[in-house]
Amino acid sequence: MKFFSLALFCIVGCLFTTYSQTLPAKTVSKIDSTLTLLKNKQNQTDEFVFKNQKNILVFAKVYRKKNLITVSNEDWPEDTEVTYNVIKDKQGKVILIAAIPFSESGDWYIEYKHYFEDNGKVFAFTKKETLFDNSVKGGLAMEQDFKYYDPFSKLIGSKYSLTDKRGKAIKRKRSEFNFRDDKYNIYKDLNECLKAYNLSLQR
Image (cartoon, rainbow, N blue to C red; front, side):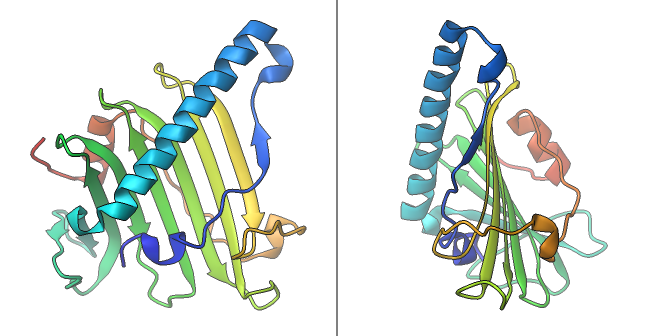
């Protein structure tokens, strides 16, 4: 149930928005440069996670239970509501936390990922949702929402896409699909995220 199962199909789309229309040219250039660095760092984090899947710390939130359960060898407890994947770098710092609601039907997949700087600040957040839909070529519709933040937790760029499993844009309205629209929060830093998810880690 690690977040790579359906996430491997998720390919970044092409709709990109910033505030460049209202900012001076030098400021826009600086923001663009910062965004490039953040996206590169996000890609490096994803690559690190992919190469170190065995080192992912996995926890499960069980129905009506406050404390999380540590999961080993994919031995999932009954009534799992949410899975939390925690990834640390080689220095032991948390660089990513993924929250993955459990899909009992298996018809959909959602992940919320917070990416962290060395100081614990969130520099990127992604929401990815995949669902089976026979009206789409390949049978999968994928929605992806990327957000990027400066050191002061200010949103400086975002990207949204709606594609099939091959990354081809779906030219239809989002409302035509049965995306879940579950409420979620974006946290500013690691401590805030750990507290919200009730994660206790030795760092």
